[in-house]
Length: 461
Image (cartoon, rainbow, N blue to C red; front, top):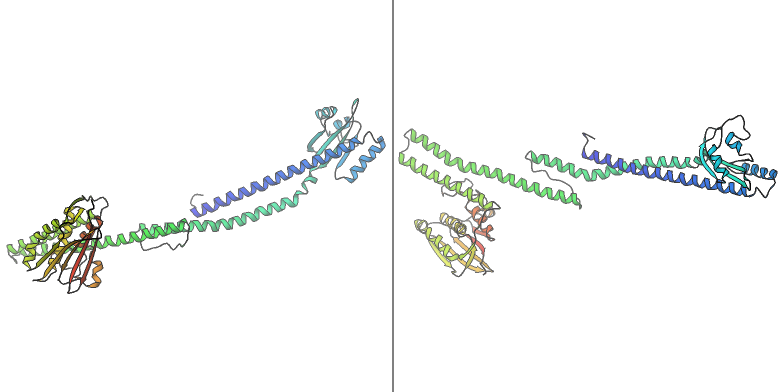
């Protein structure tokens, strides 16, 4: 079956197996039926031979011979009687022109011992097999005579002719039905596999949009559902991968273009050395931040990134971070108001949680207006430490809030870098909070400020 499909191989295998099984059963049934029928005929011949032999002493020789002839005429068997058993072993009685024997010398010896003979062999005259029973008639001085009862096997086979034809037709009918049913069953089970193979080949070529339209409640239906989920996940991963590469390319293209342009301008003495150095320093710093953020995010999104959790006072960590940003806040004439519960203890990675507070607070300062105020509050609720960082800045449009934590997502669709962000800060924040078993919410109103709320499980000793 080289070159054939799985569907064809399964179908052919089913046909061969079931057909062979049916044929074996029918042949075995025919054989056993024929065997039992032959045995029944042997019993029939033996019983009649013994019945006739039992009347040998009750009738005269003439009457006995007439009885034999009468039975020979009315029964569907042939009966030969002879008082000279030598005739059976020397030639056919009454047919001396045929020099063939009905019994062998060894079989004659068996008769001399008073035992009945049963055999199947070819008739010497008619050249067809016969079933014969030879019954000895014994006297005090030994074998007196024999009764030779036989019937052609054709007579035995005749009742089987209609049965044989029926069986042959039945086999043909069963094979046709089995072929049809097997084809349907094979299609039922193999079609989903063929479809999965087809979709898998498309996925191997980079097309993850195809879905399996298989609605079933069995294992194949569950497989199709799982396959569709996998296909959907791979499609999302591929889309994110392409988007990520596009974003990285975009983010790197701008500083590289600046650096190339300023280098050419510096070579042609179009800008001063000081301006050139400042631009190179600014762009390299941006590229450095971008690479650092990308590495951070890649590590945090890995399943094996180690988070070293230790209990520590959360208020102290937040206060330390705020002190680092006081110069930035003062530069924009901003006031940071703190309301921190110093009793709160959390278990986590201090450096990573400090990064969370830093990223959120940095955004609050960056997007706040001068002379504004930023509120930082820490309190406990429902076994969680809740940190809120609120500003009165430019806010976020409602349609952008749900996407603000995506990588490289900026509310400014022009992707301007004038504020210095890489577009990865909140994506990093969300991933760190997630690794600590916490959650992040963002509430904002365009022109009315933004409130970022972080929930971290409390340390329960």
